[in-house]
Length: 456
Image (cartoon, rainbow, N blue to C red):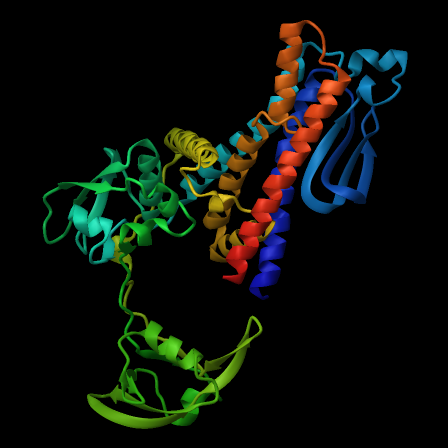
């Protein structure tokens, strides 16, 4: 199954689950408040599947456009209501009950994130310790005294255990103060050193997607994988050239091969070419003539020889950092992570409004689908983490005071409580139009970002 299909299926699954969670929050609290639910829909547009159930004959359906969903409640403002059902309309409920129904959707998104993080911690979250590989000359990190092999222990006095935690910690710290304090040590120098990374006037640049670590001038440590042949595919070019398991590739066409990654890149770039390869076998160097074959990968013709790598015993063992917490401790960590990521998201949104943080962070369905596919292909914990982060984003976005969203509707209810009567239909209609225009603008910008990333 190619990556495009995985991305589409993962995206549909993710949006379906998160929308169902969000709308179930509205649905269950509305039922508890005694409001009649007419329809529970995952997706918009023409129903693909529908079922009526319960004493109220509520319609449960899955619709054709998987980009959202809704719960339709009985409301006198949307049509005639029979006298016996008037007490079950949304608009007839006390203000606090209406606010509870509206907030329940985003609240379920936050609860889902907590549950996802908690489950991840039960089974263990794999990661790599934040050990620094290359430090670019003349970079911010080099000026601060960061060295190759340093391990980041804490950022602004908050301990970090993985590269994911370090990246989020750097972002969070930069939003607080451009002078970010990091504690590091290394195997060669175990004494803890306190360094200051100055990110002044660089926030917009560093917060662009994928720009944080390169912008600071560091890259995570990664092992050097030797170009050692560990597998030969029957009938492949490598077998035809006389390559054997255990051969170490020394050079190709006179160019030294330093690692497996460089060897793969060289082969992929030269389909159907003849090359001269020198390999070391049993302490002797042999010269082989290799005809690189071809294969199609995502519509592109690449070189392939039918050989696999032999990995040394657990290259990452020294720097593996699995996070595993059970029981109440896992729940506490899940709540803590949900809170910190929500806080970071709100800060990022606020700084985007002021122009301090790059608006390139706004993603649309194309980019979200790509992330869904990548995370699903990596494994369960990665996909759960993706779901949790998107769920948090949905919860926060829906709480924004934009009329068409839950947060905007809450503002309407609060205005009614203060005023003593509902806002006029004209005022509400105007607010809806402004909200729709704002969302169209944001979605257009998100699509622009998606297409820019896709074509670049």
